[in-house]
Length: 385
Ligand SMILES: [Zn+2]
Image 1 (spheres, protein in one colour):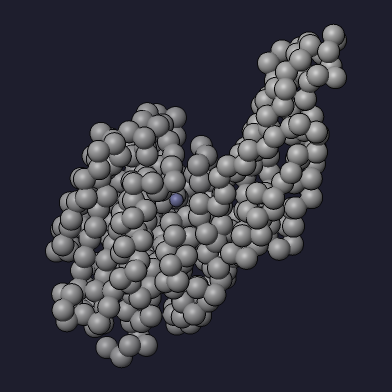
Image 2 (cartoon, rainbow, N blue to C red):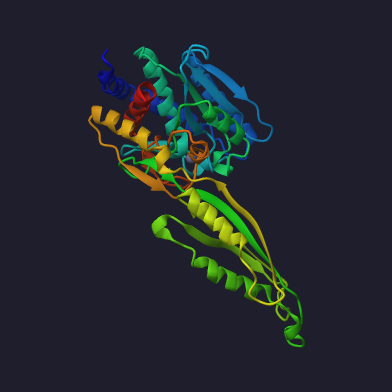
């Protein structure tokens, strides 16, 4: 088959398999997989491993002590012969605790499928599975080894999987992330903000608020001044946001507050802005005489800068066009594991997963007709990038 015909052929075949995709999705959603509960997460991992083994792929389980096991699936030319590797990245953990299914059961209605984790991101995993099946059936001439990594702790910061993700990304020519897309048109996420968390702790001096106010140094007053200053650093036009999300301080009335603390959420689209924000934070000096500031934390996920996704997006757009579709892009305020791989300079395309809405909410759902389309797009990318 001429290369140019593959995307359309993938789509034709995948449309016929929608019922099968849906039943696989149902099984996957019924296997609840909360990030913080190892036993159920492992059961979901078993199911995934079995599905990928059925395809004849090499499946390797990377055991975890406290989280669900990670799954590495490989298909294609062996290392020595292959000219490189593509990494398909996703997570099977969800933000819902066990039992969420009783309140939000898996159901298909009005062209939508609902259930915990259906959009973020079990449908994405199913799309990847069927993309591989279709590549196999059509014997499309893959030039690279494909590696699929299904992790278990993305929703809680990827502490356990981060090293593995980074090691695999370093070996890869491109990374395709199956996080949900944005909006009903399924926008691809070509940029993501870097995300950080910082803490400002103010040390003052306690004193009787009535008898000896002059001997006290009010940590709350100091913190309030600092926060007013920090608020000015917000620059939404350039994607920089700073928010005090938690604040606490003092002990009781009649006592000048000795200590106060704020936790800040930091976001930036560019690494340069991120560094500037960190420098400014660490350069803060107290306003009140005698007060002392302690600054902790900073950015822990670098931004996914658009320059690392631009070329892949051009490719994805042209493949979508061959299937008669138009593909749009967007910038996401939240981070994903795609931030980790792009930070290594590896071309990364994120938001390739499901089309739907309501991630992390009772209304979480996907548009079922888009499943074959997204799956075909991924297959085409794995063949043609
Ligand atoms: Zn996700």
